[in-house]
Every structure is written in C-alpha cells, then in structure tokens.
Length: 413
Image (cartoon, rainbow, N blue to C red; front, side, top):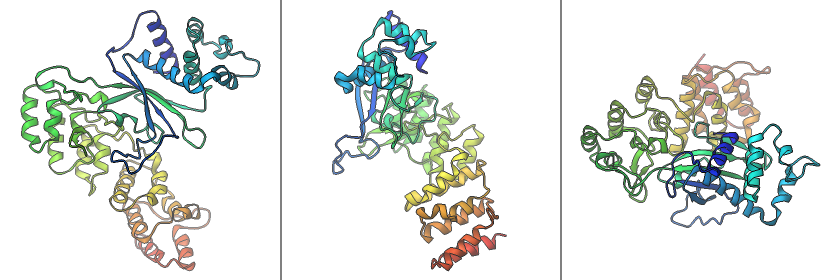
C-alpha cells in the first residue's frame, strides 16, 4: 500500500465503504518515542522495545490511519497550521490543497471534504512534507529502522504501512499494524485468547513431534497465523513461560518437527515477527548447519534479512559482538559469501586503515580471516598494497598478533 492507496482507503471509508477486515482492536498504531522513560532495572526491560509506544488501536485500517493523523495533530498542539506551512513552499497557503499535491486530485478531494487537523497532518506525513522519511509496507525490507521490532509488541502482527527516519537526521517513526485474530474457531484450528492454536502449543511443547503429527492428521493448518509473523514453525516457549513466536535456532529435535511441518505444506518462507525466515534462523544456529540450510534452499527457502550486498556492513559490525553472538556473525558472513557476495578486496577492507576504529582482538580477527580464506577470498593489490602489506605495517607498529594473519594469508596462496 502506498500513499495513494491510503487516500482511496480513507475516501471509501468516508463514503461508508470500509475496505478490509473490521474487528474491534484489529489494528494498532505504533510510534517511536526517543524521549520515553527507560528503566533498565525493570524486569520487563527490552532494549529493542523501550522506545516504542502503542498510540492506540482501531477496528479498521482506515480508522488506524486517521488515528495516526490525530495523534500527530495532538503532538503539534495549536501549531498544526504552522507546522504544515513550514514544510510547504513559500507562498503556498495551508488550505491551498491543490498546490500541496500537484496532480493529486484524490488527496485534494479528501482534504477538501474533511480538512481536519488530523487529516492535514496525515497527508503531510504521507506525501513527504513532514520529514525525510522512508516508507514501507508488508513486502518491504524493514530492518535496521526505528520500527524494526515493533511487531514484537504483539503476539502476532503484520505491517500495513510505516514511515521511518533513522537518526541523526530525524527520530520520528510511526506504523500501522494489523493484529492477528484471537479467540476464534474450533477443533484443531481453534485460536486461544493470544491467537495460538493447538498446533502452536504442540510444536512448542516437550512432546512436539507426536502431538503435532496427530493435530496435522486431524486437519490442523501448518500455516495458521503465518501472515502475522506467528506461523507454528516459530512457536516456542518465551521467558514468561508462554507460547509465542520466539524461535531463535533450528537444530536438534526442532529440525525434525520443522521438516514435518514443511512436509505438510508449511510455507518455507514464512517470516516471524521481526521478518526472519527459517533460513535466517538456521544461519544463526550454532554450529553452522550447512545441511539444514542446503535442504531449506532445496525447498525454495531464502533469507529475507541477509542480502549479499551487505557483506561489507557485516564485516564492519564484527566488533560489536562477543562470544556466541560473534560466532553467529561469522555464520552470517559465511552465508553471504556462499550466497554470492562480492569477495574482491574483503581482506584489504578488513585490515585497511579505514577499519582501524573497529579494532578486532586476535581471538576475533584470526577466525574471521580464516573464514574469508576458506570461502575463496584472496589477497590482491589495491591502491598499490596488499592485505599482507597492511598486516605487516601493524606488526611494525607493535601489533605482533598480526603475524598470524600474515601466516594464514601466505599459507593460502
């Protein structure tokens, strides 16, 4: 859905033609609040969620978008027209909607019919006047932005539309999410008050294989709630002892139940609440499950969050990780290389001066170099020097552990 689609949605709702599902509390508006009070001692503290605020819920998508505008107008207070005027070109009056949207007849008509402060602020946001924003819908890549964890506020939710601007340029983000159904149905596809089915509970339980098999034979849907980031594939017991979409790895007994669900028609590319697929979860499984990843690929599985062009970013970020988290980062780099990421110059980039601010200790640098070499990355001259030349400069400056890097690279030739 884009801005023009939202305009049509609102115009239809104003005319009494509400599009899409309608149910109490079926949609939620989430915003990023950089000024939220943070208590790291709170037992519910989660650094990925503390700056996220639920602005409210609505029965339809149209009501949810109007809620976005209303809350933006509330935040602006008595300065809505002043805020709008600031974003417009000089000489364009706040109510001169034709000059806001050149060629946008539908948006103009919507504002003419209902020129409330909320509608003004909503259109101001959707058409790019509010701030430099990136816009996303359910199909977009939505990670490393201010709302990338917002769906985790709910047991199941899918993004309808979001606008996000990453700092330091701006710290505003707001999104509309459709929440999963709860408390409906009967039999093997009944949903409890959290939106979990018997199959979700079985998969998360200790006797998962036998119980899940029985439910599947009885007609349980292996894709139930998958559209809301809550496929049975991701069901596990969370820190509170409740069944949730919180699976973090695909290994051991869990791999057996995963393949059983896939054999019964579960979508291999279903995504959890943060957008990860089974391939993404397999990649962060320790040790690297090459066989599982190969089988998922054979079934048509792919990563949603790992793209080959991000290889340099993952190298740069290695210094952020320690322990198992670093090993998972090595897994991501290995996966990207096996997925076809550009290899040329990676050793040079890792050891070059522009990476000096991401100094890696030997226990991280050496296995990283070993991984790159094992994946076919080779040393080569760039701007007159090789990676070995760069490593020898570090040795000369007193970093003796770079000798291990030299030995590895020279031994691979």
